[in-house]
Length: 419
Ligand SMILES: C[S@@+](CC[C@H](N)C(=O)[O-])C[C@H]1O[C@@H](n2cnc3c(N)ncnc32)[C@H](O)[C@@H]1O
Image (cartoon, rainbow, N blue to C red; front, side):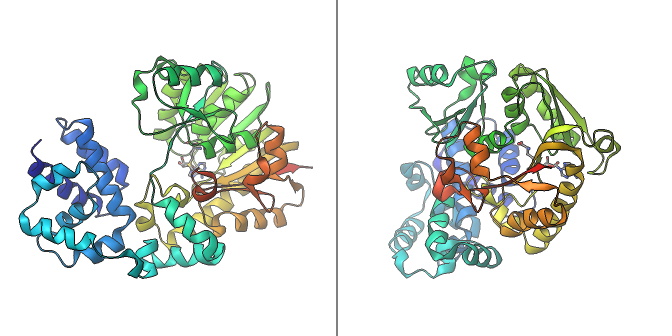
């Protein structure tokens, strides 16, 4: 495609994404469906440019003020993440000169707001939670794209075998540092061409998500509930850990998400998974299973702010009001799900949020209201599930994963055992 046309498309994509009225990933994929002739490198340039603007929106909007022409075009020029020569070919001489001037500005002079590029409410919540020492490394980590992590389906394959297959194909794959099921691959290789992927021997899954499933430590022959199963990322990991035995219920209120689980289940070879749409967290089905379940995972709906590396638009689409509504929902779901757990059984509450309000605050309130649930230190639970260096993953007994410390998405989990 001619450079001018590609920059025009980047401008058009930014116009759509910056409306912030839908998740950026769905806007980007709908855009690519409308522009089928784009090649992989062009798609990469457009998507990364849009994501760079979402990551650094305050700074880039500030810098873009000095230019002329449509704001989205100026933003696309400053955030361009494709081939530099292509961009040169698209710029008029005034634009090229302006870009040089902006690039020459010393970032040391930027105010905090333009260094962290977070909305004020989120910056102050994280800063007071973490202190400056941990806040700024988090900011740096959130500015980077996430690595590609895979989970080996232990029902079908061994990690060493998959590693050697991937490395023979030149992928430079390495074991993940904590999860015994995980593999980390640099870049964004096309996995669809690998038989191991087609056969269901591997799934794409962040190491943090794998660690949540490991914390549940589901065993052969048990009754397990994944209460907020969604499209089943953690369900599939739990089902494989159970070696496709016992019974694993995958509940969710969203039927479309559960539908997306079904083809993944077929690929995985699991026959112990029972997806079921529930109307709400107090559905009759929960009452029927009360006190019968060995392990319950509540992977609660949350702000998703732990996934900002992948979904930088979320920081602009979330708000304190939305977080307050989510915390009420999280409390209600956990309170209903706990009824399922049998005496001696395990309950895990998890989110992919960074915020204390959605994490420790919910777990502490639950613990205070339910003295029959005894907190289980997450490092003990992880060590029992053969996770290396589990102590590095835990803060105050809770699993606390940070992109800046663990190279995973941000995750939280609390574990209890029922008396
Ligand atoms: C964090 S996502 C789950 C992700 C999923 N566990 C995975 O690993 O891919 C939260 C899920 O909770 C579901 N949810 C929302 N309200 C719910 C409720 N009241 N009861 C059960 N699930 C609910 C949402 O539809 C969403 O799929």
